[in-house]
Image (cartoon, rainbow, N blue to C red; front, side, top):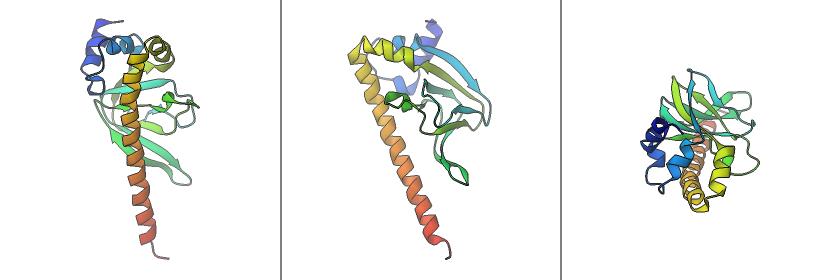
Length: 158
């Protein structure tokens, strides 16, 4: 583990307040990743194998809308995470995530992370509890977006 990776992770808002040792475990599974504007960080339906801790830039989380392309669910930036579908089976991305501008993330290999956390259940629970909060926020964002679309559909002339 690079000490600079661990230091950068300690400064990431998502990881603040996790039990001692959690960041060091994550750092041992992490590498820097960069994405150009428009590039996908993850694609719906593909294997969910990476947790992205956004360090710089903005990422839009989208879902497919038949005939219309991507439907924006939420936009996140530095201090947020992208890619939480790895938490439960079938371990496939449920959304696309696209860079709105140049993006830098700390990309965490979740296969390696799962193995490490399996040996330390208390740390695993703390991290999964944090991820559950993100999941709840994303679900709420999706709900609001669907309601907005429903309202727009109701306003269309018939």
